[in-house]
Length: 333
Image 1: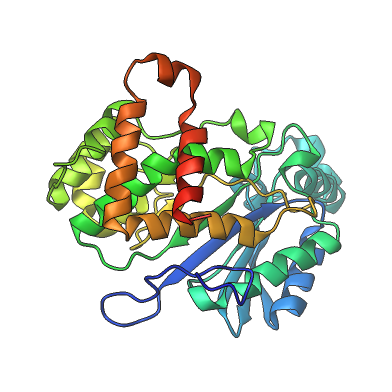
Image 2: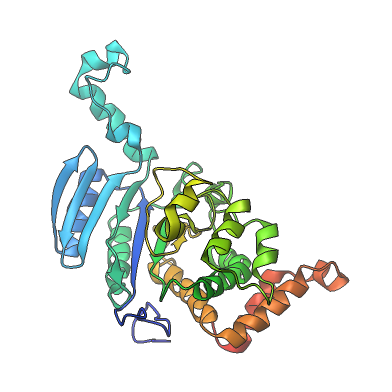
């Protein structure tokens, strides 16, 4: 791995058409007012912000177009002429909106959504996150009701079923290790949107002879995971591959079609000086590396299958500890 920067790089940097792979990043945080966040991000990223609608700004930068928004559709769409508001609040006019906005900015996360960025550009996100911390940004640990996430949308090297299955398998066997590495705040541990895949699907996935075509791959997953609420959400990818098939299982306007995985597990612990964006990214790179080293992946899958059997050893040894020891022995971490 490349150690020249804090963000490690996987072995497979390009897609099969020769272009450098990209990744989108989504960061949820609090502690900074909306305008302050927009202005600070514009300064740090070298861009100019344009307010597109209430609580939605687009920031054009040399890296592409960022979106900064309040992660609440009701607040973003709020207007004094809305008849759903009590007349007493509407009569207060702008003062009422100021009070509502102040409360919303304290409770609802502000979100920074990056454009697809080349892997080699991710140091810019590292600098951005560290700078926002110094400016007073807060993450999940600041309040029990915060459950802020840092999500990655890595582009895949190609979309062949065999490639996709390798990535799924690598994630499945590393889920416990990743969850321990991220040290999830209690607020996120109690949420439903970072659940592992169903046990029945995982058992099917890790079999040595699992080699589905695209349709069967999607059906196998959707039969037991017809939801966005998974630590690795495959629905945006499936919307890209075969939206009519996906629509037979899930119809949700929030699903955005893209040729990427949607990694939702990490929390955003931005006010912790020991936490960095690169820590999250580098753990994902371990998944990348394992997915693209077939012999190691087969070996760890075999150990994982063995760990799911009922035995005295498995009752006294956690899979998380076993997988971590294996990763160290192979030089992945």
